[in-house]
Length: 245
Ligand code: COA
Image (tube, rainbow, N blue to C red):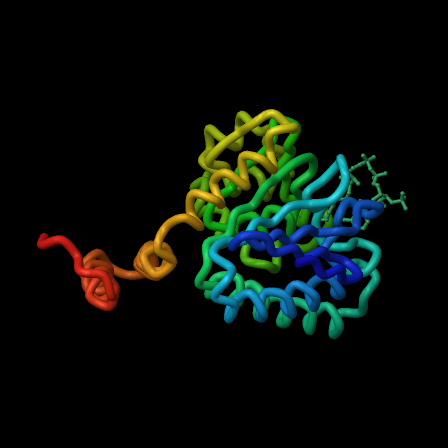
């Protein structure tokens, strides 16, 4: 099954949902239209039991996503910007609450919102041509899609401040060392690698997959004792009989 929107393409095949950011002429810059279309598609995915795992990727050779659409964002009056930021927050919350695992398959430029989308994914795979950067502060703004919170959780406070305050870009090897990506592969293997990881996840019991994801994500915001309680609760809820522990 395939559905073409104006800014994204949605495909579903054997339990795997492929979401392609599809504005290659603008390096897949994140626009208001893209935000709305992502919201629409993710709303459907959320309640679609056939979807076991989602893969995000970017169209074209040059970029996964070169950040917010600057032509749209930097020219908008401040009230419009405030509204966009508010609506963005809703979309990002939605990302976080999606029960199925999300995989980001990253190539070329991954800047600003591109990094932020990747950080809302559970597994990040990149190709060796990838370039990560957070240009917002240099443009007189700050990340508005969670980047100041999600990036330090992934790579630490020091590295985040370095990227944000100096605009330093990371190569694929640096991103791998920093823990920003899980796997680095040659460009021609990127989508194949993403698909293989997705197939592995899709072959597992979806309830176990979704509860494991929930336990880690929700637990990371709790104290250890609260997290252990959450884990027990989620384990008990699993219909399958757990081994004694
Ligand atoms: N918003 C809107 N359009 C963008 C864009 C963005 N964030 N990033 C790139 N584009 C457009 C360019 O304007 C250009 O369009 P044009 O052909 O109509 O002029 C097209 O995408 C190709 O980009 P170009 O700059 O020619 O490619 P490049 O290889 O020379 O440079 C980048 C690539 C990513 C270094 C450069 O495009 C760039 O710096 N983009 C802005 C990144 C940014 O600051 N993002 C905002 C984060 S908040």
